[in-house]
Length: 427
Ligand SMILES: Cc1cc2nc3c(=O)[nH]c(=O)nc-3n(C[C@H](O)[C@H](O)[C@H](O)COP(=O)(O)OP(=O)(O)OC[C@H]3O[C@@H](n4cnc5c(N)ncnc54)[C@H](O)[C@@H]3O)c2cc1C
Image (cartoon, rainbow, N blue to C red; front, side):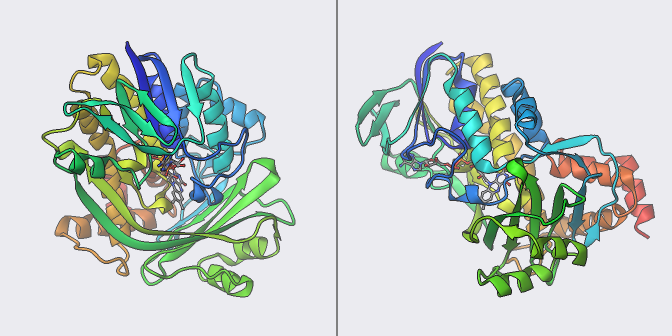
């Protein structure tokens, strides 16, 4: 057991990393510069928290394993649980997916409630401290390894420091300052804007979730999702510079471009509970730490600091949860020996297929700039056909839902029984 691990950043990435460290370090300290609310409230350091945040199917499973009873606790507190796709409308690439029982259950809650509950759970473990109001200046590096962290209020000694500072994560800069190689960065310029508000429909709405994705020629869509507290999150998203306006009339006109008429009516007549808030997201960003030949001992990067995905696919927190399980396995199997190399390799195995899935989805839109190799074009044609068949074929719909929920690898979309149905059904 190491004596002290310090996690920089107390958002979902940092909290899940801290959970993984429990049992491997006598003390785990999570530092954040924000003043952290006691409950489910917004805070400055997580501006994305005002927008739709889905926990993917795999994420709900991992969270349930890491925090026994968590999902049941949420449901007891009024968090809607939806049966995919029986109680959800999915319109992907212009195709409305068949309603079927895929066996998948999603939980739908606001980001502040999710983060606030997990923060309380993590802080309740013996030896864990979540300390707010701490501006991280940087790790202390002694020429060989990281030995602690400097904050606005002093220096903390640490055997392990985890950079979970989000996509602005500083490890890249620190590595350069200390004379280490820096990771290559991949980006996909998606120029995306979110506009969101909480609403309450006038009459009970028949579904619990509506998701309408972009299509070529209309790179925008929206999510309309029941949340805790008898509220619904409405998030409208536009990619490739096709941004939703915030003027009320123009906003509704923008939404009308993608919303099926019945859904549009439910939204347009709903009571607004909060003002419209926007969030700009210029590019997805992947840092290839696994490719580095030298990396300082005592440091890791985690969560969005490693990969900040296109948010429309809702994967960041689920990937952070999967990384947390990987970190736990690395510590169990080899302790701190060669930890960074082992962890970054394990994280890459999680991140790579997700990044590929997203790149495929983004580049299926002609509005998104980027090179489209033959493999991407072939796969995208196949996926477009699969989405068409999923309008009526429950087996294909289930395979797709499980893949985008990260329960199965993308190769599951090409399993023989799915492939045959896609090829024959797509005629
Ligand atoms: C618009 C939008 C929608 C999204 N929707 C989804 C979704 O539906 N599903 C999903 O899974 N993911 C979604 N994501 C991604 C998700 O929010 C992140 O993956 C998740 O928050 C994990 O990120 P993180 O903890 O690594 O970093 P962040 O959430 O960015 O947290 C970084 C933390 O570091 C702190 N910090 C920063 N600098 C300092 C400093 N110098 N000193 C101390 N503390 C500091 C901040 O206060 C913050 O708490 C979305 C993202 C965006 C932008």
